[in-house]
Image (cartoon, rainbow, N blue to C red; front, side, top):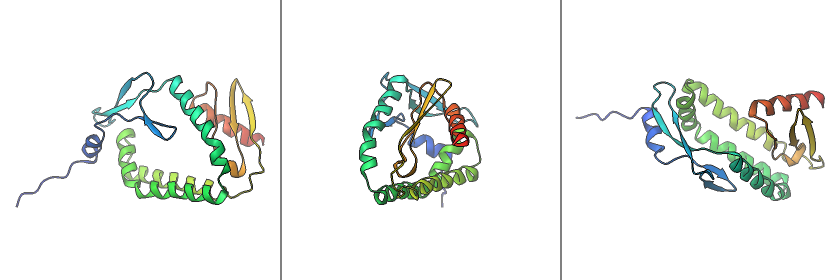
Length: 183
């Protein structure tokens, strides 16, 4: 009897990434407007795992416009429906926790067991917000401006998105912490 070795998680991931990863904007998988892509590598051996769409300001603008256009429909959903949708997202994340862990472990070099916990934590975050989706949507949008970056955020049942000006993710998190502390 001949035994055929199973591919390593990295090899299996590489096989699934033959096509470039695209942006998900407005409910569709789309290439970067520039058409450009970039290679991403496994940190363990620097092997090219795949290619991803290389977004720029035009893609960010397109995504922000799509989020803005989608918000009225999201806000119009009952809290019960929003809660059900967010719970469904959490369920799907948990169902794919191993796949997510392999992808994240391969991308970051972190142990799979740690990344699986991170995937489960992501599902918990969706459930956290889902449980607040049925809160009366009396809260109103608020704006806060700090050091030239504008952050728009919503409280209570209309949880939707935050938009920023020229801020990177770290700055957005810093602003969110300042907003929470000042509130």
